[in-house]
Image (cartoon, rainbow, N blue to C red; front, side, top):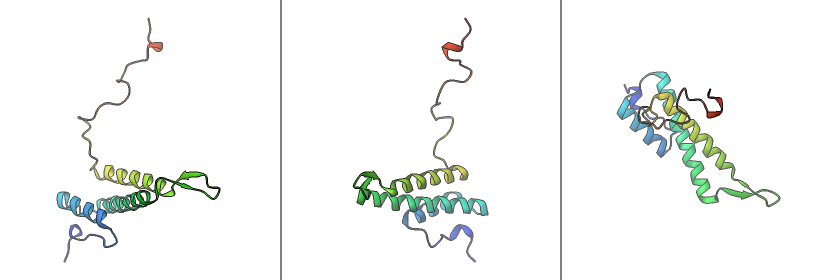
Length: 119
């Protein structure tokens, strides 16, 4: 009998299958929630690749019915797929950055802007 870690969903395309195989080889995810999140990440990666190929072929802009250039619909699909992919990776605990090494964004904590400081 095959384990859940051995079965790659058949509907995944090359990039999704590669992600599934790589994550399973390294982490051997077996819980239902983890498998569901991995499937979402792999499907999002496949959609991202499809949108990227469409944009590569058609370009990021296309004329509407009045011949006014508009953003290609695949650009929105690409953005949403990328966001879904990154969210799924983060929920799996596979996001790429180590918080200790990541640069701090914004103002340092407990520092007030000059206008709010007491003289």
